[in-house]
Image (cartoon, rainbow, N blue to C red):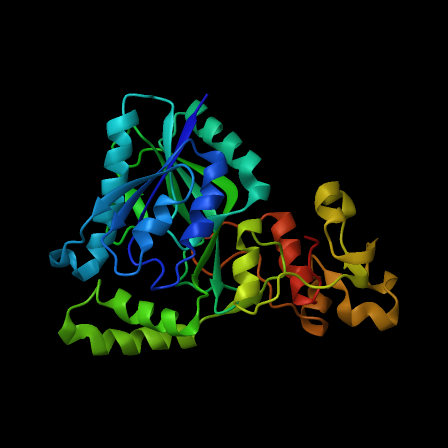
Length: 346
């Protein structure tokens, strides 16, 4: 039976409005303990982290000489991973589950996550990759253009040679990766506005010298302006509810009277279908089976040639990256329903 341990890094989590409490509390139910490399902060982050159950804090001081390229981020990540290896490096069934402190996992995925860790162990894998939802400026839009990674390694075997590298986006020295359908909810671009601006300005300093900052600030703004998003009204992790409401955002849409879906009901689980926030859900084979007054709001899962032009949808079958895997049928339907203003029950 596998054993799962969390690990991450953090500094000035309060100052920059990181969702670190939500991150660590979402990890706790699947982890035996969580190793956090806590950089010396100016806002009480160390105290706040120490109050979270299952956390093992590792005090650190960030090395400013590792400023460019974001190398300080992988160095700090590896400090947490090395500490985990000191305690459990001889255990062949020990795994490290890495979340950055603006990432959260969903309680609906807990069972799947545990199953996938065991499958990865049984299949001789040394790393696990997860799906990503990158929220952009609100909790109800996800970014999908090529800049955004569609899946990424977020778990490694403790007794492997895997290590964080670069700016800690991923891991190297990996031999075999298991692809999980569990989701990582990335909230790094949904924060209190003033703290978000301060964080963006300061994070660039971890990548570029002072002389190059003006150039990269302009480049960052250009990327931001080109961000392509999709509407998302699926469920968020329960640990995010208080934060979402505090920020003045909507937790979930109200239930609609009816939803018309052109597609095969049997392709979706009963649990999933019961969560659609509509008093009545009608499944039909063809758009012609939908009453005329409802057709503009009908959700067409697989557009035929004519419908692509007469009733176009902005929802692609996957993110824009060449590395993207197609979304699962249920998540694809979540996005299709969201496009029509239909959400999911709490």
